Image (cartoon, rainbow, N blue to C red; front, side, top):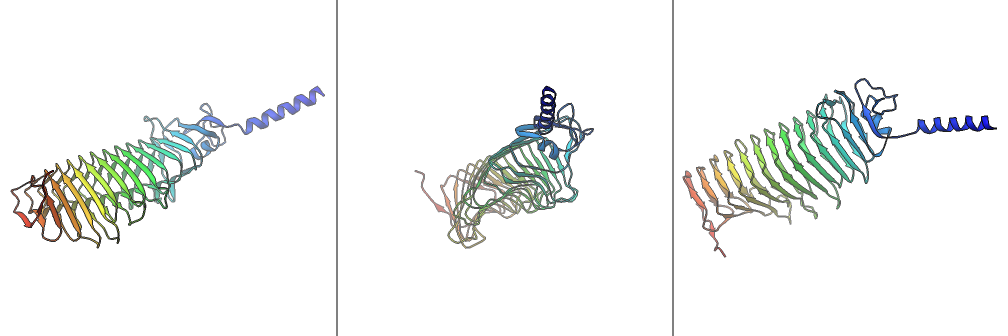
Amino acid sequence: MRFKESAWMILLLVSLSAYAQNNRSAVSLTGSDLATCTVPDPCRTIDVAMSKTNSGGEVVVLSTAGYGPFTVTKSISIIAPIAYHAAIAPATGVAITVNAFNSTVIIRNLFLNSLGASTGILINAVESVYLEHMVVSGFNGNGIEVTAGAEVFIKEAEVRESRGSGILVSTQGAQGAAVAIEGARLERNNYGLTADTNASLTIRNVLAVRNGSYGFFFRNAGAIYPLVGSIENSVAADGTNGFVVADGAQVTIRDSVSRYNNGFGFQAYSNVGGSRSELILDRCLATGNTHGVQAGGTGDSPALITVSNSTVANNRNNGIVASTNGTVRAYANIVTRNSVGFNAQIGIIESAGNNLVRDNATQVLGTPTVVPLM
């Protein structure tokens, strides 16, 4: 009996070890997906390593290599030390998919390079996801796409040459996404950053350069749950348009620059009945664009821009213009060396009377409304 009991115990231990999961797994160029995925015995791909890792555990990269596309389905951290080039280079589909309900996901220091794939990172379901020091390059659709009602934190990302948006935030229903972006570079995408209805965005130190259509595009679609955003210390340059707020979105921009070759430096308009787009600018610079600051001009619904303590200079057409259905409230700005300083021929410009409008080819068109300081 003792021999039989010992044999059964050995078989049980072997069986349990076969199904054991790691708290820390590892991948390496020299690893094998038949391995245990421990640090001494690493796997070859991240997808297999995750399958052998406990929820809340981590997968660590041990060498420079390509590690294949993967789908996240649980709380996990995927970490590549900065010394290694940990690449994901898919020919089709999505490089990284996050389908991890009620989970926390951390992904750090991966290089995503499309060889024909559509999407870099697709966030479909998660509670919180942290993307840190990521490079996302050359995807046929969007670089980073957020469709989940989740908390998304993006730090020090480089997203370039996406045929869609570098970063797209597009959620449905009442469960909108809260997205914080710090220190990103959005370069040569069609759209730099695009955000749709029912998102809350906090953006700081983001550089959007040479994007084909928009540097920053906030398009609310007039829904009951408005898009709201706050931007600080950011730049839109050398694109078709700089910062554009549309269709009922509500955005505040401070200490930011729209410069050189943009059509509109800062614009707000609304195409959706019953909505009003609102843009607040403070301590901003609009220079070298076709139009520096424009409210309205597109659509049948109102748009309001409040601009203060800002410089609008060297724009090829209008410095500050209120067009169809547009209202601008201007306080303590410098408007100089534009073709037209203030243009209130169609819309409404309300001036506190303390704006410096000087050295423009035409100082003022139309009649701004002077409002008293209280």
